[in-house]
Length: 189
Ligand SMILES: Nc1nc2c(ncn2[C@@H]2O[C@H](COP(=O)(O)OP(=O)(O)OP(=O)(O)O)[C@@H](O)[C@H]2O)c(=O)[nH]1
Ligand SMILES: [Mg+2]
Image (tube, rainbow, N blue to C red; front, side, top):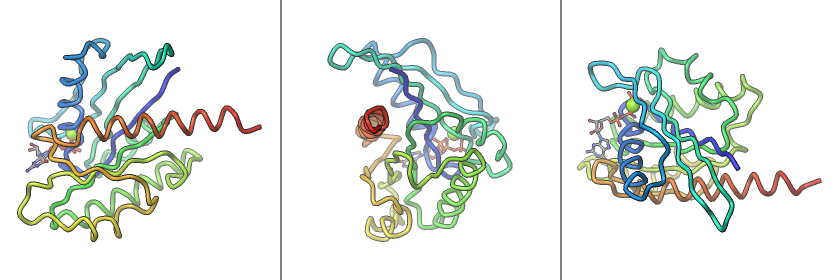
């Protein structure tokens, strides 16, 4: 079975950090296939995407998961649309920095629009919300973040991606949620 998981969120929210840390963790367990591909500008901002493939065996069923990030910079709208093709599950990486509140909101709105252009409804897709940068002194409270950035009422994970905290948990949750949705889809006729 194949799954495509996309991490989205505002620029600098920590998407690439999540993917890099996750790649390392999974590689140490021999669960990745090939290299981590990252394309970034000189300022370390994602220009196109980050991508890697994992292969795992769950109860005898082989699961291939393609993990990707979108580029957060606003001008890269058309790339985000391409990357969302056939997505099975999304991780919304939210920057807890109170100064990034508007950036988080704008990316949520834009992602909904990008998916709508593809005929998909962001609010009906499997999503896990990750509140990243919990180490920042000016981090917004979880209650505030929940009321603004979790319109799905879905599970959330608190993370400090730079320290690896919450990274694996986020990934496990989205794989589980996306698989459950896929299973339900295949059995509802
Ligand atoms: N303090 C803190 N910094 C973090 C955390 N996660 C990521 N960062 C830092 O935030 C900056 C941006 O992280 P990236 O992972 O490159 O952000 P991105 O979402 O990929 O950004 P774009 O590629 O522009 O969309 C880097 O300097 C990271 O080291 C965290 O949990 N806490
Ligand atoms: Mg990036």
